[in-house]
Image 1 (tube, rainbow, N blue to C red):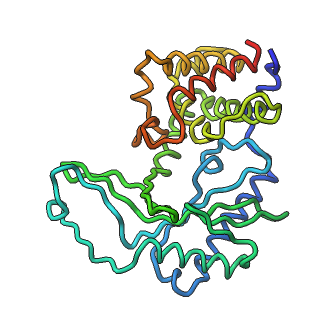
Image 2 (cartoon, rainbow, N blue to C red):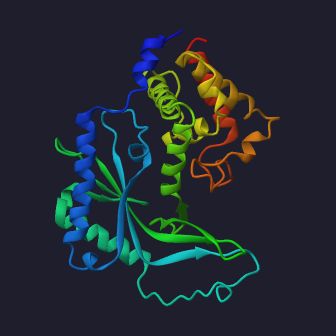
Image 3 (cartoon, rainbow, N blue to C red):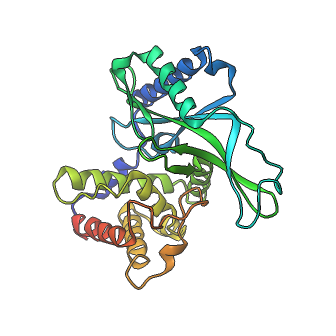
Length: 297
């Protein structure tokens, strides 16, 4: 084996208190920027962390922090096929747009951090790191509701990309909730195994062994989340748990397998695999084979 049980166990540890402090500073400063803006401070905006930091699955000392800045005075929506907005009692009376909102958030961040430290990207606005804070990806979003025929709905967030105005819907709060639930039901081993998967991905890249940029941190967390609980609770070592997780993912992403079609993101509200993803079943299958071989199992 390339790495010992003791090494894997070290990888399961969450980030240091020093890193955690930097990340908390980042979140607080974004809130200060929004609350100090004359226009935005009068709006209903919810600010919360998402991504690896919020889910307590980040592994690198230089992990960035994703901060969602969600406008809640209005919302976008999707309706079931064959039903119109009148059926759900909805209208389009909002005279504020997502693009205006993103511009307003960018202006507030520039006022707080300085133009030289703020870079607008396709889906987010990045604030450069320094000795006091981690790099921050500020994600301006609006509320989004996905309605069902019985008029109930799942609430998430939506953003529109700058380059092509494509619509991107996520469910970060459900992701956080489901991750906590999985962790509690696996003897607190789910998030630890996610960190091992992520750390191995980093190690393979650093060693020049294998790297697929489409195998993201989000994807790895979702793959581990789709592993059944017995993978986490029926084995006594991290070596065994890692092996069983790799085997399970491999067996269910082969060319003849169908289980992967049912897998969801950790939010369990969007399919993990579909035609618009940057990753594919085949790429995931190849990746876990590389993990197995890299570990010299």
